Length: 281
Figure 1: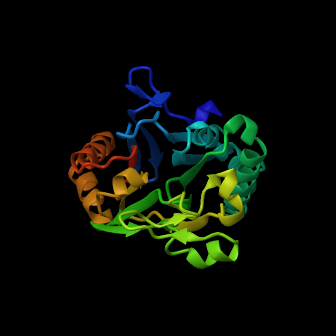
Figure 2 (figure 1 turned 90 degrees about the vertical axis):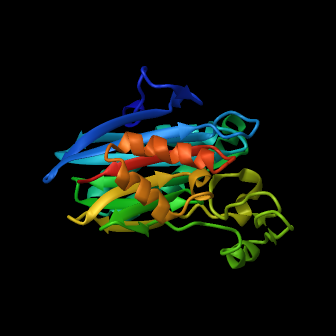
């Protein structure tokens, strides 16, 4: 599955993967360019974010594959997702017939596999936001957790993904037998531990967590300028519109991605910060 990962020996390497690079594909209206930037946070642990950013041609179709995987309690789960999630989405050919079902099945299978291999992968977990660009015309965006996908149409930021936070999914967590803590000075957490309500892995909390993705279909039309995928290290300190404004100002998507991660650092984001910018026009 390494063909889905976009690394470069000339790029700075963080956490075992390239931290910055660009690439491009094609649509009926010209080139589609992308760039990404990954920056390790200030926490005292190795980089736990992983990504996919690449174009592939398969069965006469061009697919743009983009993802951010934000790990917690180790980097083995996001690294595993980086290598295997898209291959599972594509494996049975169902993507061309029923994209929503294909993506949902792959997410479920990945979670089950991660849980069953916890002796090797550990008891940690990962959020995910993924985007599949089909022939430059249609996006299928899915996510679990609080990494986010935002598109720009006519200069306006539109959030595509759903932030899965314990405070907003309290009823589901409590129905599963868990609880949501609300300690002063802290964010809501599942059983006082995890700050997201959906994730891959997290074996000790799985009975109280969901790994079901929210899935959205988005048409890419002449007004669609930019797609941004980023981990919560960016979104904790920057609004959707602020991120879009930066990406629009810098026409090269790699420069835009690097500026977004740099700005998040300037705003004192403490988390790992990962960002992919795709420019359609």
